[in-house]
Image (cartoon, rainbow, N blue to C red):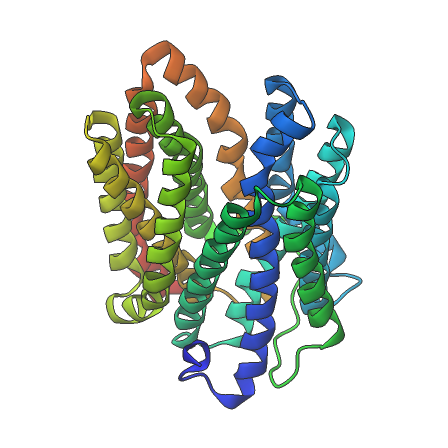
Length: 387
């Protein structure tokens, strides 16, 4: 299989373990995300304020990503990763069974904690078990697998939403997540050893650049995920069907492109690739602010999604400067830092949209990416000093 091409035999079991958990996590999260808005409006009857509160609380587990470090005192990292995928699946399974405000908060938080905990450990497991050349290849292939799973779950919802009730639509992807998480839990990681991880909660000055890049990347990510589609709907009148088809097309493009990212990192290096990402993002945000063409807007959205995957280079940059025992705690800390903008920017951006016009939000995004572009000048220096 292309997923395992070029991977040493001793590492294939690790990659299979990670691939199955990535499928479970993605199917659970994407199933929840695709169904949530219609479910809370048509089935649960939540108000806009209640729905907004659920969405806001859903970001809190990302902000609390550092708390997974405490669990590592009691349980091995790969087992915690499997349990996290089970939690994400269980949260999705239960959501459709309880169409009321309080239960939706509880099940959504369970799903979100599982998803965010796994995301942090997904990165650290790759860094711990694969070498500097293999890690970007593995991460790129897993990103491609995730995009393919997102496409499959989109097609599932698209095909069966008229035939199945919400309880079953949530149950199926959630059950897949639980089953794959349970498989990972019962089939422990073998064939590769990883260094014992430190249980350090506080950030370290050694990794200041990695933290700074994550903070700015979080700002760019949340503007893309919250406001880009909102722009299409509010300013350009995109229908639900059009947006759904755009998502599926975008997933298909990423499915093909993402596995190539690892090879590009190995060829160009982290500094150059991240500079390309941020320069492209700067142009894309200016395009969002200025374009009057729906076709160009779609193109910008797809390019935005593609270049976001270059953020793999941030993880491989960390691998080159990090002590082996620092991977898990710092991936958890980085996730917390990355989610600070996710809590702040939606409200700030909403105010800017109303008070200053929609262009101001994307110009703000351009400023964030310009700052990221400046920081890439320090990457090679950090690798020389600390690598």
